Amino acid sequence: EPEVTQTPSHQVTQMGQEVILRCVPISNHLYFYWYRQILGQKVEFLVSFYNNEISEKSEIFDDQFSVERPDGSNFTLKIRSTKLEDSAMYFCASRQSGTVYEQYFGPGTRLTVT
Amino acid sequence: SQKIEQNSEALNIQEGKTATLTCNYTNYSPAYLQWYRQDPGRGPVFLLLIRENEKEKRKERLKVTFDTTLKQSLFHITASQPADSATYLCALWMDSSYKLIFGSGTRLLVRP
Image (cartoon, rainbow over all chains, first blue to last red):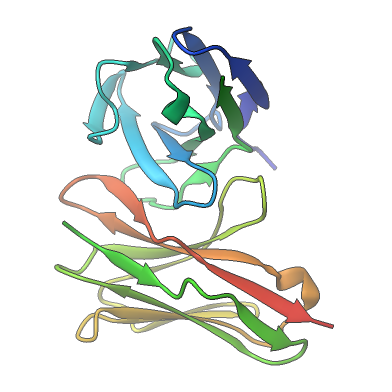
């Protein structure tokens, strides 16, 4: 069964450094998302991406964040100048089409900022 | 803004019983309400979706109801098993903003 994959599974970085989290969505899916989950808290929407552009973003998704689909398979989240409070699990998700709303999540990348 | 409330206390039940989890929301009704399962350190896994014009949806041992008057969804697992132990997340799809908003989840523990 096709699945969303994410790399790395765990990333440790120093405050102020840039990180890139990578995702490979399911191949025939058209809509892509990033979420984050701080330990013990709820899953929070960050950004949605369709047709090579951002379609919606949350207040969390400020200028520190950017997303890209550099080729036909990868979807990346870049966090510039990381802060301690960026430490969280970051989940990528994808869904098939405009009328199919269930999302398929990857296993997540645990980001630890020290 | 839309708020979603799920019981933050863990639900502890005996194997074989029916687990019932509640999701309440404020403000306007979503177009779709979804339920996901999340195991520790893993991503959410989609379980069921119910549309605003549907009252009930079933899939194997799972049942979801949706009451737009009460602004509430109930999620039932019948004949529960220890393997059903996980956190269950309610999520609302808002057509107005094209995003999924999650509740904080309810942890279910099924004792053998």
